[in-house]
Length: 172
Image (cartoon, rainbow, N blue to C red):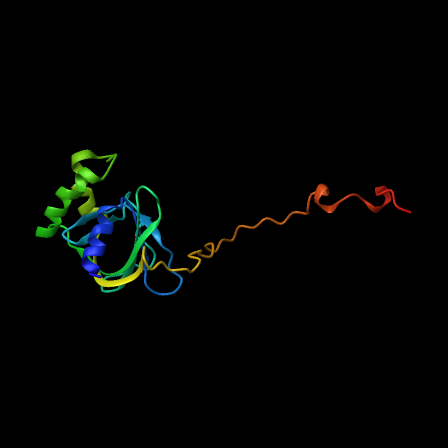
């Protein structure tokens, strides 16, 4: 199985990818993206989407593509991570591709200037390592522990959960 062809096909069929940084404790996060020339580009920061926890340059990230029609996992693969510098030749070409994909821009045609000031454009290049495919799915739960929170509720159980008092049960 040619990993490049499999990734290319899966990325053409997905509108949203889930990205998780390598290492323990990182959660997958749904991200809008563009797929161009065999590479995923993610725009994060400012008023755009937040970057996944732990995503770093020269690290590995795991990308899960889901089918638009079934919302089922189609493929999970490893990708190397780096960024595109604002003002570079790559930046200018990618901004032209990002503009029509980014819906409901609050600042319209001024968005590229805001992106250059406030955002990071991540480049995720597939390594060829397929972690999971539709033919060989991972049978693990994929459930993540809830994030830690100081919130808690401590109240007594309601009367109807305790049952009837013993004196009213009609016994001897």
